[in-house]
Image 1 (spheres, rainbow, N blue to C red):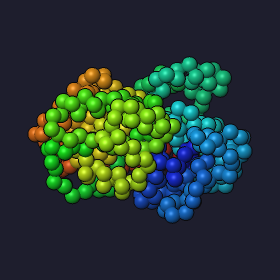
Image 2: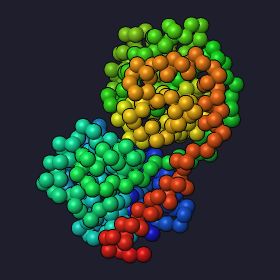
Image 3: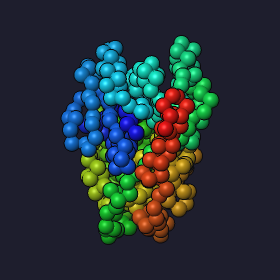
Image 4: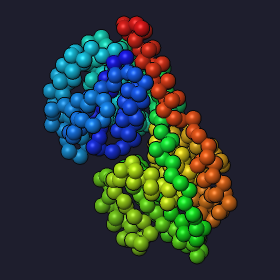
Length: 370
């Protein structure tokens, strides 16, 4: 199949959607299909192993959003010229290129799949209004999300009868590193997230003084990888709490750099509640780190409670889980050993087969049979 993967964002921007998009395109190409990415993110278009079409349109610097109709004219021309079998649009909560291209693909009668990579908890009213205006929930489109919990919320928010699950995935070999000697008296916590209010890095930082106090003679430090608009506020919080020697905001790091940091760390922590999947947590898990996260997030599908990590119902329980893993050397060692040696089901072999099933379903139902 020839598949157009359309997303507002792609490399060099780094995030869960961008990493997933690259992994999906690489897996499709390796399986003999022809993926092509269409994006509004400026950057290089060569060196990916598959075509990348970067639209020549202005974007808002902070969020990378398109704001002119020219983008859709260019998408329409690319789709018409490309003779694609399937269009797969990837969006977050606000993704004008992805969701607008859904209409463009529908207009050209190309079988279309749409994946929402975010949790739509607080956006019922917005999507309800859009559906009243456009009737998009009744378009000939297959709607999908990245986890069962996110799919249920998307179905309710978007008034969509059926939302299929197209999970993210991880290439385990890319995250494995030789096991390094560990000191129980010197522990490193690590998190990978966009520095936004929704990700709740501030909650994690505020826990650190009490974690340090109750850790006794153990030295505990926290590394947060990622960038975002909250960086300044988080730096001020770190200074106010006197954590300059404890908490490091490491900025954007490459895949290889993050894998190396995982190899030197002891526990992965993610306090985000509205996490649709949790790709960074999955990457840390296959790297051999115990994972602490929130039970209501997408991590509930990835992390087996008590074996691969600990999931919390609220911030108080999150703190207790974190303190438990800091203090309990045997439990931490046992989880790390399991995660390092046992494969996850959330790999690209499984995810790719699911994507191909949905693509074939779209072709059968919307006019381009196999």
